[in-house]
Image (cartoon, rainbow, N blue to C red; front, side, top):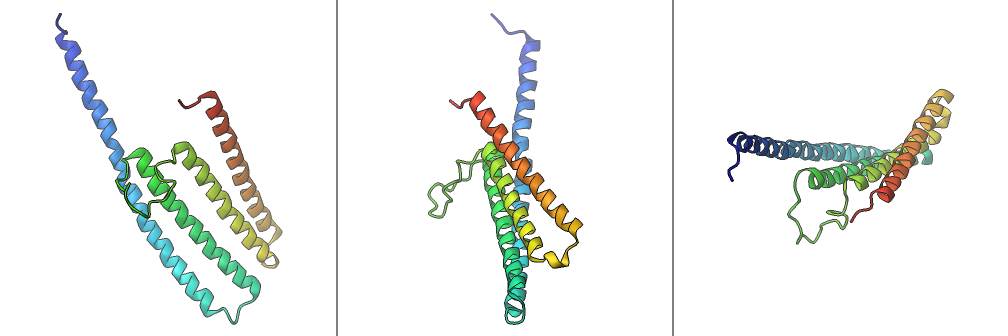
Length: 179
């Protein structure tokens, strides 16, 4: 029995399209590499703020110092978020990183799927937002009530979004158990 010529050419076209679509994932690789540049920029800002904070340590109030340190924590959380998105995004959408034997390989690498990444990303955003709200409360005497209300409102929308995302993820896991 022979396969009709038309059906055979259809399979070739289909395989070419599938290969093209599968290969297009590599378009993301420069984006993830570009995030490393963003990480370097955060490092520059972290060093700049650290130098400013240290240079003014003897002349600033305790509250200003706390706000400055919270800003450093904010930058460190953002840096961690970038690393998480780079590694997990690259491994989930582009290619596995060939670092199995590396002694510094983070334990979570290779175990964070897209669902886990969404939850971790949202949790990081909530933490960063919470730091901004705390900074606002540390400077409450310099803020209008409206600014403070917006800060808390935006933070609460992040908290609610994270909560709903976690609930949806949990419900999705229960309805589609992984085998």
